[in-house]
Length: 267
Length: 220
Image (cartoon, rainbow over all chains, first blue to last red; front, side, top):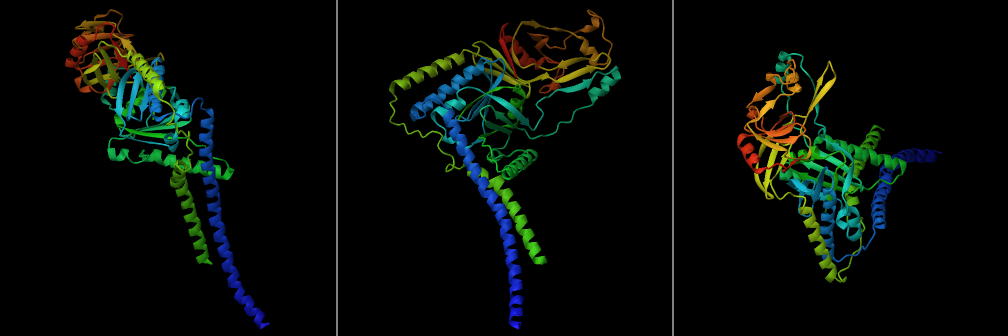
């Protein structure tokens, strides 16, 4: 009897300790298992994306590197000629020569040197027919988000007297310093991010967007990832291009672009 | 018991932070890793003959470049950036002069009583110089009086005509828009005009001399 009691007394703390260990293991598993499954889904979504793109691309996939370079030049010019036929301002991004330029009816009206850029691995891997299928014709913007209002118009009530007009002209608008960055979704499922940065050091750090934009982006990513995990849904893979150019030029380009501009890219 | 509670809590917090860090920093890098991204095309085509294909491509590139070059005027043309308020004068496709200007203030002036409105901006696009003139006289439109809170005089009233305020030259671009000078030099480089493009005296003279009737003006 006394032996049984001792056994029970001894086993009680051991059982409690084991329960705690199970609980901790459960929490860790609760975090690691969805993370593992989600990582697998993410990798799979990249593979699916590239396979879909490959399946959609017509023509020869294997191209001699020398010919490939020439075909890229041809594609770049062809796309710009198509853009020149339009009445509106278009954007031509040449990552090979690190320039970004605004073109109006075929005339380069503004040219800026790209300070730094980053592209998704997808673009580094693409060759032949996939490249021409993606960049062979100008792209258009599906949606645009920017840190500054693209619409610069302000509404002013006409003064009722000369005194009121004098008072209005004496009132000056305050000019606040704002980060300039904008992000667009292109019709080929590519996200283009342009940030205005005046220091080369800043340009070399990834997503050196303003604090507000950066935080919103992180929160959006976390929420969509958690939603996908909860729904056991594969996330979408969207290849990205991030370009850093001088701030005033980023602003000029943003204001100059019409609602649905054409964009040509060479990588 | 309390110790276990805190350990559980710590594990939970660390786990959540770990999850967040993985989502923000690690997973995007895994996604971008070359190991995960399959080659979009497995091109190993060094052996494909280049010869005539290369020549054909080079010819096509030269033709396309020539086609694109045709869009750029061979005579003088003028470019205006309404965001930075800078102008660029090109002669024979070479940048001949650049400097500051003033362009439209991007404003809607609304008259309460009539609900009528005037829009002051420099429209983007391509225009041509319609006419040129020296010592222009400004025929003040209705909005010039409305904006100053003054009664609008009848058409042809002498108070509508003002000499000297547009500088020594004008280049008419149509639809009421002009390139001209200004008395308000302190506002140069700012969006302050009613849509016209204001230049400093020396720049205006150079632009007046370089641009002919029919010369193109690119505004963005």
